[in-house]
Length: 137
Length: 420
Image (cartoon, rainbow over all chains, first blue to last red; front, top):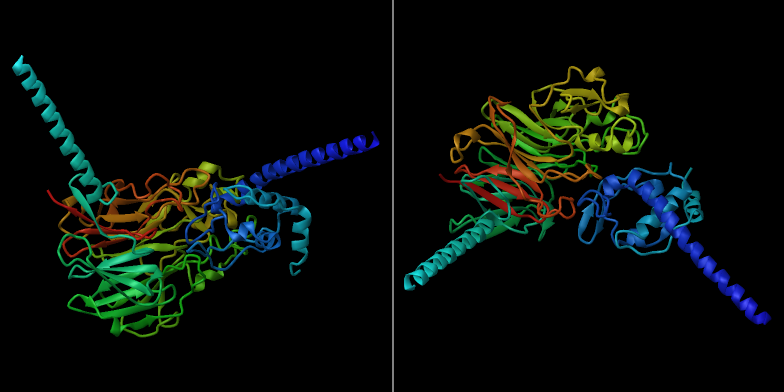
């Protein structure tokens, strides 16, 4: 009997945790969309498709789906180099967005990693904090 | 009864013929005009397709078309398109020049072409540019990627005019960062943000040898010498981000419509006010930019700045300018201006606009009426820059008065002709 109760409790906790994760992801995505619409959409477009030769696409690229710290550092430092994605060059500078809070950056990165056909793990405020700590003062 | 069936049959036959000929016409019209729409009486043929990022183009007296590429194709940055059988379509395409860029022009027996920091020229023999005679006449111009196209035009009096775009939106301390202050004075203006004049026949000139002909121009991509008035005209791309950076001053719609894209008449010594000023085509006023204390109403130091000859809606990207001097098109086109609009991106989240070629009726360098859309339908179904089918960029006039249009999305080149 004890075993059953323990198992049931464990199961309930897992379900609760999963539900919690779902809620957190959705909440983060919703907040992230607001950040995206305010600071990112003008250049990267509503659907993340970007502008040829100028502003990079965010659709299924290694920059967005790859290393989270590298991605967070792009938001914090901005970007001032020419990059190539799928045979297309992009060279407009992106301003540093270090004025955004850790949570805002986590939310917007979670949003772009799970929008425009992308699917990748969420970014947490703690991960952004770690990335920010590596910036030169 | 027999006659009834005969009549019915005849009607059916007429209908079938009408349908067939309409269908045939429709089919021909699309292929003849290369998927763009142009006014009645005009025809367009595709000279070449998928040649790459075709920026500006120019046509030799012998009819060869020279196209400047922004990305090398088979290691070449300039393409020569030749039509041997006279059907308008190039059947002989060759290339030379191992540098990317935008500007290309022919004047007094030379072909001129620009990289993003230099200008080269080639001697022309019987209308054919000789790549072995390449000579660098300008070098060391600012290229920091943003607005780095070096468009060119010539006055046929020994001078070449080169646009040096400002590598910046509004000369903020941190470019394009919300809240970052505008630098005053803007240091960029010393080496960019204007039109520079150089001699056509001196090798390796740079800032010290050239002169700043006009300043306060953010980014000019289209420029042409008006031979009717003997003056320089340019098309300027206005600043971005009024709504995104100043939502308390500009709403979403104002951010899409403002500031104006401008056609300007440029005289030596002119200052058009960038980064301090922008043109509001609705208020018809040069106004102070918010980075410099502007609020969307105050003119301040911008009051005396020269106004545009023609004002277009915001962000639609006037990349090509051509004064039409030919005799092939109807009389109203003579000395008027064609402007190729690349299509917008900074109108988001509002729908994107542009992706067309307009005509401005003009006389003595002044507009004599409203501009009208001449060629349209380039974008196809979607007007987002990454999805647009074609993006008009360059314009040129052939020796027979035909109009050439280039697209830098995939590289289609159209030749537009008129017949009564």
